[in-house]
Length: 73
Image (cartoon, rainbow, N blue to C red; front, top):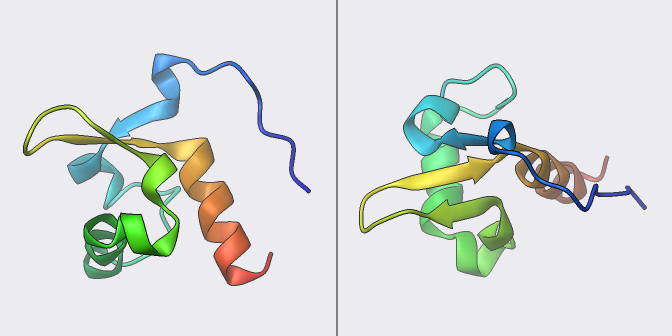
């Protein structure tokens, strides 16, 4: 099992719109948007932080861990 650090810094977060085209995101923008819209059902809920009604932040370490576990890495 992967060890997740217990401390989080502001640098671990990225705005959703920026992360959709970020080099740490191996998904297409449409795939990423689908994960966001279905985050409650697909297990990615912990990777997204809702700032207001339209703005989300992505916790990059959690997102990559969720993605790795879904892909069987």
